[in-house]
Amino acid sequence: MVLAITGVIVAGTVAGAVTATAQEPGTQPITDCTTITSPGVYTLGKDITNTTADTCIQIETSDVVLNGGNHTLIGDGDGIAVDATATEERAQDAYENVTVRSLNAESWETGISFVNTRNATATNVAIADSVVGVQIGSAESRLGYVTAAHRSTVSNATLSNVDSGVLVVKSNNATVVDNTLTDYSDTGVHFNVASNSSVHGNEITDPNGSAGTAISLSVTAQEYGGGVDNNVVASNRIVNGTISVNPDQSQSTGNRIIRNEITNGSIAVSWSRGGHTLVADNRLTNSDVSVEVSTNVTVEDNVLTNPNEAPEESIYLSDAGLNTVQDNTVIGAQTGILLDAVAQENAIVDNKVINSESGIELDGDSVNNTVAENTLINNGNGIVVSLVNTFSEGTNDVRKNNIVNNENGLLVKATDRPLIVESNSLRANTNGILIQKTITCSPDAEGAELVSVHGNVIAGSGAYGVLNENQDILNATGNFWGARDGPSSADDEIPGDPVTGTLANGSGTAVSEDSGHAGQSNVQFDSWLQQPPEDAERSNETAS
Image (cartoon, rainbow, N blue to C red; front, top):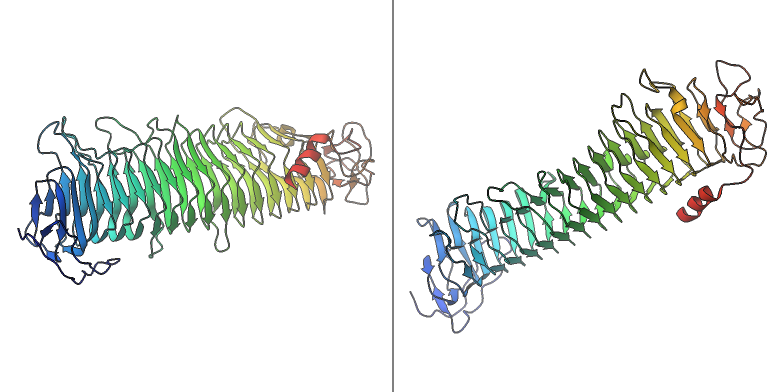
């Protein structure tokens, strides 16, 4: 080995590489592929092209600093540029404190690999045209061989044209921070059986617009146990990519997806059962949040805007239970919040959806859900319920929502399970509540009789306060219709209450007439409230 090389060397060609600097004094120079077996500081003295060795620089000791001097290791598509792996023997002691910095690597299977190496760091490196940029740990399944690389860090790296930018496997306390990843074909940053780790401050973009997986927390390497717990994905900027949390039914818990900015992508939580997952304070543009086959997920304080083409659903729960969606703002969506398939025992609380086709929608077998204290303004439909052939027993509660200036405040397309509509403020909608005639229920259901509407403010409707197209009578007693003297009729002929016969001749918003019984309403409105109920007014004040 040459003992000393000084001077200025021209940098390699890796994207993101910078001009090489003079060699650091007091270091041992490297001018060819080699194996490092003694602690110390080593510095590349020039670019190195490797066409023969599987690994260019092998590190087989602790306490090593490899300074690339911003030079480039050039491979032929195979092998590893820099490899610090301690797996020669069973239960081999880990290497400690290995740092690779200011290094460029191009055309390798793996740029930098840390396996059974603790406190390892890759910083200010640029890796391109490789399968994996930086690998931390391994899915090695031979019993007794340690592969974890706990407490490792990747920072200020530039990773481009790779399958996976940073791969962390069966290793904990990893930090991936302030990196730039672009043009990845598989995953930008992948935590596979990794806990107590963080991915923050990274910029991850896919110029091809394919919306691949920018960041993944998963469990696919479980041979000898382990999960994906207590990780933080924070303050990343992602364009055309997804943040995915998929523990594959393991009892993972404590993962937090917070303060990220995502454009043309998504946050997807799936197969997360038992433990708690938090998705909070993210800013999403033309993107969505989905929770599928998962429990105990909290989606809160996110802002989802759609200035261009909106996703089908901005927040989507499917086959999901015991989840909370609260304090989110959705603007310009097709559907703001959708509960579908077997979405049960969820709380949809204190969200705001505006300028969307539908605000909140319950479909499929979605029962025992609470939709409360939400603000739904300037939408096609404020809340939509469409339950047909439901096999689960249960009731949906729609309470204390502020529903203003929509085409339909509440649209019931179909329901074969009880729907309770109480203490809402439905104002200035074309129709406050519309119960559709078509496919109203399963054959064994009782139509509008399954819907109860009480204690609401239903006022200022352009057409109807309640339009019941179904032949069954809708129980809507105890509501305030916008005037002390009760509801009115939309037609010249004034219908009477179907139970008491009291005429709908007030100055409040209108109720519909029963097309099968002249002079009779199909809405039971008597008796009514002569002033707004306190709960409904409180929901209106809170929303404003």
